[in-house]
Amino acid sequence: MGLHDECGVIGVYGANNAASLSYFGLVSLQHRGQESAGIAVSDGKRITLKKELGLVGDIFTQTDFEKLTGHIAIGHVRYATAGGRTRENAQPFLNTFKLGSIALSHNGQLVNHTPLRELLEDNGSTFLSSSDSEVILKLIVRKFIEKGGKPGSGGKQTSSEQDDSRFVDAVIEAVSEIKGSFALCIMTENMLIGVRDPNGIRPLCLGTIDSTQEPSFILASESCAIDAMNGSFLRDVKPGEIVVIRNGKLNSYMMQVPVKKQTCIFEYVYFARPDSIIDNIAVQNARYKMGEMLAKESSIPADVVIGVPDSGIGAAMGYSKASGIPYVTGIIKNKYIGRTFIAPTQAEREAMVFVKLNAIKSDLEGKRVVVIDDSIVRGTTSRRLVQILRRAGAKEVHFRVSSSPVKFPCHLGIDTPSKNELISCTHDLEQIRQEIGADSLAFISLEGMINALKECSCGDTGFCKGCFSGDYPV
Image 1: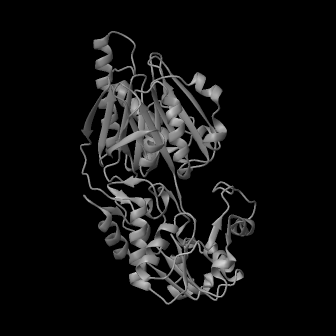
Image 2: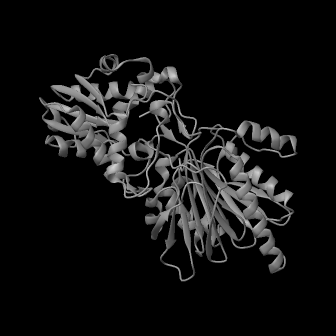
Image 3: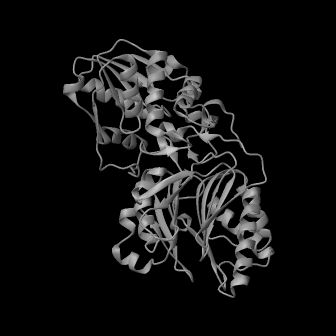
C-alpha cells in the first residue's frame, strides 16, 4: 500500500490524568502516523509540552507523566505531508504569551497555507516550522491579538471570561478563512476546542470519560481512541462545527461557510482501524460490504479467498461470504516491521514486502486463489504479493481490489505519489494485470463503493472521491 494519512489527534478535558489518558489514545491512533508524537497538558496555570520523533511508546516514560500534570491535554501522532520529517514539525504546536499559551494539533492539509503564511509574515509573525498546521495556530493568535485578548488570562473572573469569549471568536474567524481538510484540537490553560472542516473530510469524534465525577470529555480522530481511554462515544463532530469545552460545559458553534459532508472515502478503505465508527458507519462493516460488492461485480471460480493484512481482511471476508468461496488466512504479516521502515534504495524498499508479508503454503498450494487488497497505487507491492503467492504454490492468482483505481494525487491530507507514478493513471486494466503478474484483475466500481457505504449508513452520507475522479471538494 502506497497511501499514508497525515496524522491523528486527541483532546482530553476534565481528567486529573489527562496526559496519561492522551497517551493511551495516541497509542490506539498510532496507525495514523509513526513519524512523531507529542502531548501538551494544562494544569490551569500553564501548558507543558513534550514532543519528539518516533513512536508513542518510545517517546514517553513514566517520569514524563510525573511532569505532564493537569486536567486538559491535547495529543498528536504525525505522518508528514506538508512539511518535512523534523522535530520542529512535530505536534502539538505551542505558542506562549506573557500571560498565557495556546497549543494546537491538526490532522489534514490546507490548500491556502502559502498565501496565509506570507500574509502573517508580512504582519510580523515568525514561524519555527515548515508545517501548514503552524499557520493555523499563528492565524488564531493574530485574530486573538486583534481582539485585545490574552489566552488563559489568570486575572479576575470577568476578565478571564471576556478573554475566553474573544478567543472562541478568534478561532471561529480563523477557521472560516482556512481552506482544505482539517480536524483540530486546540487548548488554552482552561479550555479545549475541537474543529472539523466544513466538508468533514478528516474525521473527529466526541466522547465522555466514564471514570470521573466531574463533566469530562474526549476529542479524537477515531472512536477506537475513546474506547482505549475507557470512555463512551457520544457522536461525531459535525462538518463545520466548533466544539468548545470550558467550565465543565460543552457548547457548539457552526462556521459561517457552506457545509457539505464529504468524508474521505479512504478512511473506510484503509486509514481507520476496523473497530472505529466514523460518521455513523462502522469501518469493519464498510469493508465487509465493499468485499461483498466486489464479489457481485467481479466473481470468478476459485478455491480460496485471502485478504492482504490488515485492511484487506474485512473486504476478503465479505467477498468470501458473497461468493461462497472459503476464506483462509493465506498471508501472515510480520508485526515487528512497521510502516516507518526505511531502506536506502527503491529496490530494497520493494524487497521489504518479502520481509513484511509471507504466505501460508498449506492454505494456498495447488489452489486457485482470490487475493483482496485495499488499493493499487504504484503496483510494486501488488507485484511482490503475486510473487509470494506463486512461490507458495498457488495455481492461479486472481487479484481483486476493494477500492476504485487511484488516478489522481490528493492535496487534502493523503500522501500520494505524483500522477505519473500512479499506475492506474498511466496503464489500462490489462496492462496493470500484466505488470503485477496476476491471472485476472478487477477493481470495485466507484458506484459500487458508494452503494456499499450507503448500505452501512443510518444517516446523512457524502464522500470525497477526488483520488478516483479528480473532483475534490476544495
